[in-house]
Image (cartoon, rainbow, N blue to C red; front, top):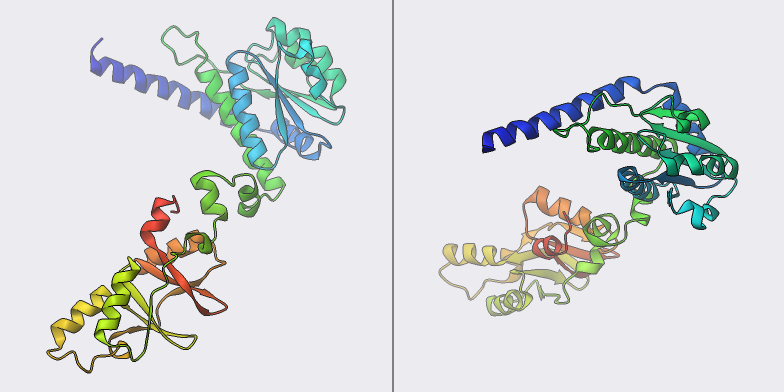
Length: 319
């Protein structure tokens, strides 16, 4: 098959799935709201049941819900008969996902899902199925056709299931007033976790360059060279007066023939940007980007604490 034909096939598959998603959107109504209320009001957790491709979708929905404030657990329909039914407690709500709603594993486990839980929600594309008949609420995921060339492999149907799971998750977040600070509690690791929780203090350079206001050019050059950041801080006691960068040094050399009487106070940039060591690292990154600068002074109780560098934050995944 030619590449152009393959591209057309791919675009057609996406068009089919977009169309099915639009149908799903148009169907959202009272049943969706009922399902939300049941899940939100549950005294226990949400158990999501599936088999085959629907099991993979169920696992993804569980992961999304757990990370956004709705405690959830996956239950494989075929494993339920071998002890896993024990995860269901009377206060739990069960969401069972099955496109046909009539697969033998789902049908066999339905009486127990119904008996052991407080409510049974069906996510199915077959409103006359055994699953639909047993459910307290039905979420309709009917699709007119799958996106695969032979119209058999779960494609459109799993896309619709995934999208409906995301819709449940985002609505439950709003109902629970789930905010960024809550999200951060469940994502302490990786780049995402760092952006939500990491503090400036974690990324401050151990090197703390500074000079006095009367320091001469030699002392300034030595301080800047030792910092590895191309900057030094001018202080007077515990007061921060300004900063001197390697750029300030170059401009001074271009504008002065004699260096004898040049002191830090005369060439420093006053009112430098600073941030508390307790601030979020992403706040420091925002200032660095907004002001188009490479370093920030870090303070503790308004006293000089250290330097935080743009490249260090980038290396650590802070954006």
